[in-house]
Image (cartoon, rainbow, N blue to C red; front, top):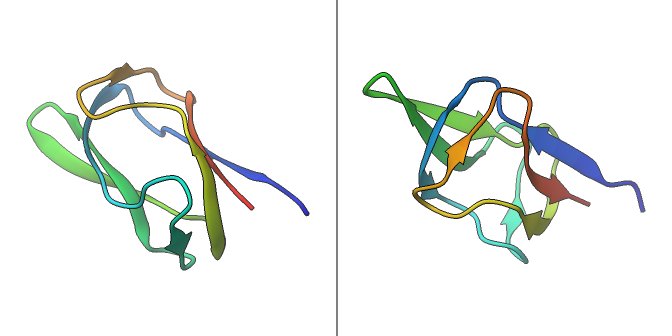
Length: 72
């Protein structure tokens, strides 16, 4: 089973986790929402599958290109 990493495209703060670990997600569905410069930026699933790990928590600060979650 291949695992796909979901990475942050921007530096910001995790505002809301939409799909927790163990949850099913469709491709192009939001997994979480980041906040940067008072804008909400959805982080979309690149593939359909199950969220295996969520490596951040709501309120965490994230860097650009940081791995946020994995999908298998």
